[in-house]
Image 1 (cartoon, rainbow, N blue to C red):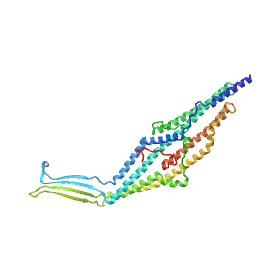
Image 2 (cartoon, one colour):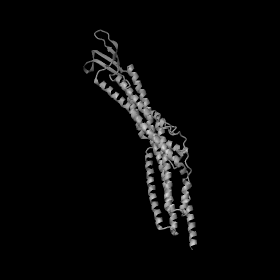
Image 3 (cartoon, helix red, strand yellow):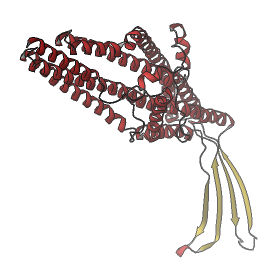
Image 4 (cartoon, rainbow, N blue to C red):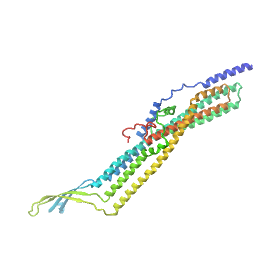
Length: 440
C-alpha cells in the first residue's frame, strides 16, 4: 500500500509540476525599439500640441516680448481740426479761421538705433525661451511615460508572482490531500497569496495614478507604454554620456543659460532705449490754415511746419531710467544664478545616468538568466526538492533583481531624455519634431 501511495504521490506531483511551469498564455513578442521610441516621441509631441499650460506660457512670453517692443515704437500720428471765430449758434464770424494740423512724434537717429536693438533682442529671447517652454513640457510628458512603462513592468511582475503563488498553493493543497505536508504550510502559502494580492492592487493604483497624470496631457491611450518598452529603448544607438570635463561647455550652450543671457541683453537694450526716450521724442507738426476774405482783403491758404524737441528736465524721466537700469542689473545677476543651477543639475543628471548605466551593466548577465532560474526553482518546488519557504524567498530575490533592472533602465532613459531635451543634444536621445505652430 505504501508503494502504491508513493507512486500516486509522485505522479500527482509530476503532473502538478508540469502545470506549474506551463505558461497560461503564449508570450507576446517583445516590442521593437522603433515602436517603443515612436510611442514615446508621439506622447511628447501630442502633450506639447495640446497642453494648455504650455500654450498659456507661450502666450505670456509673446505678451512680454511685444510689451518690450512698445517702448521702441514712436507714437501714432494725430489729425487736429481747429476753427476760430465762432459766433452764437455756431455761426461763422467774419474773422473765422480754419486750421488742419497733422502731428507725428518720431525717433531721433540715436533713439531709432536703440529701438532696433530692443526689437531684435526681444525676438531672439522669445525664440529661446519658447524652446525652453516646449522642451520642459515634453520632458514632463516623457518622464510620466517612462514612469508608466516602469510601473507597467512592475505590475506585470507582481501579477506573475501572484499567479506563481496560486500554482504553488495548488501544489501544496495536492500534497496536503496526499498527506505529504501539514495544514499549516498550506495556510502559510494562502496568507502569502493574500499579501501578494494586496500588493498587486497597490501596484494597480500606482499605474492608475501615473495614467491620470499622463491623461491630463495626452487623452488617447494609443501611445501608452507596454511591457518591454524600457528594455527596447535601452538598445537605441546613442552617444555616450558626456564626461565631467565637458560639462562646463554644455552649461554655457544650454538653452536655459542662453535664454538668460538673451534676456539680460534685452533688458540692457531696453535700459539704453529708456535713457534715450525718457525725456520724450521729437514731434513734427504740419499745419494748413485758411484765412478768409476780410474787409476787401482777399483770403489765402497758409502752410506751416513746427518741430518740437523735448528738454531733459524733470524727475519722472530720471526715475524711469533708474527703474530700467535696476531691471537690467537684475537680469544680469540672474545669468549667474541660472548658470549655477544648470551646472548643478548637469552634475546630478550625469551622476544619476552613469550610476544607472553601471547598475544595468552589472545586472545584464543576471537578467538574461532569470527565466531559466525561475523555471528551475519552480520545478524543484513542484517535485518537493525545496520547501515553500525556500521557494518564496527565491522567487522574491529573482523578482527583486528584475525590478532593479526595470528601475535602472527607467533612470538611465530618463537621464538621457532630460539631458537631450534641456541641452538640445539629440545625440544623447531622440527629440520630437514639434509641429510648426508650437515650434519655437
